[in-house]
Length: 291
Image 1 (cartoon, rainbow, N blue to C red):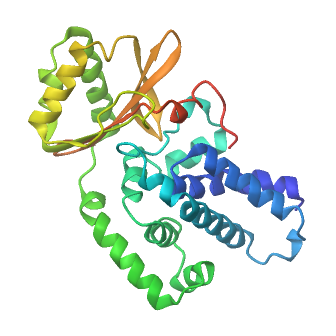
Image 2 (cartoon, helix red, strand yellow):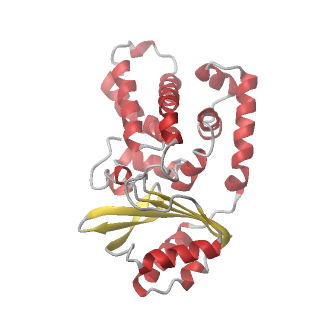
């Protein structure tokens, strides 16, 4: 197998690994490119398990990047949310990965509530089905240490992972309810779908006006949505889009992306509303992703 064939076979898989680790499309693309640039200097025919080797390279590069960017994340203005993947811009292999793997937006948000190490171990074990011996070799840690890290990560995510999921049809209906509410000004049908413990997170990155703190519980979230609607926050063109394999809402003004809304919806109602407004996380819309 030559380097080009190697690249075509593994690029989308490695992008999905890097994206889950980093929550950034650009950084994930850069990591994968860096992996293959490094690979061009190697004799790939000598690799006994290419996928495992590439996964190790990718995860280690992600961990290095996360550690170097930690201080920047710590002073990020307001809530930090992952960069959404708008599926009209992806190629066929990545689109297939979005359908097959746990790469939903809500899941990626959850992953980023873990530490870098917890996230890495959880992905390798739970999503990629690596055994502890392989994980230990990748991360240069003992198997016992990796088991403890995985157990800790699993406990943190357990409640959300086990929550009964809504169907795609239900999420589609919910998004339409929101569009109808914006159009009519009557948010009651949408608000009725909020769980009592709903949380709204808005990421403006300090570049646009957004809620600087999470908004908790049904009454506060309802009041916030009604308030910003009255101020014209949702003026412009609103349309349904596919975000990370699920239905979301894109707002544009004069063709320019303003925000993306996604909903984490379980059988208990809307548990989370994510609003991405940071222009740097919307600038891929209208352009094809590399992977």
